[in-house]
Length: 75
Picture 1 (tube, helix red, strand yellow):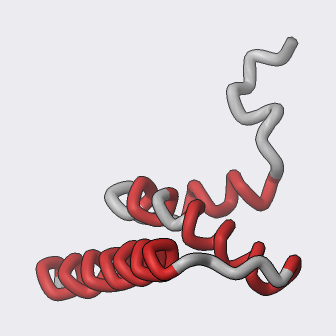
Picture 2: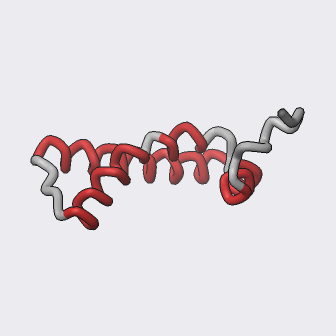
């Protein structure tokens, strides 16, 4: 086993970690469930229910709002 902690992590993921702002990483990680639901809709024609669509919308707008406010505060 290697001493390198990144040995099992794909290169593209390492590049993302090096280029992303640390305060946004958890927020972008919260998009995983929304992306999964949208992929299910796009690929498998699964139909999310109304509460699921509301959740996807809230998550997406929350991430956008957080990104915009972080740009306003920092810049």
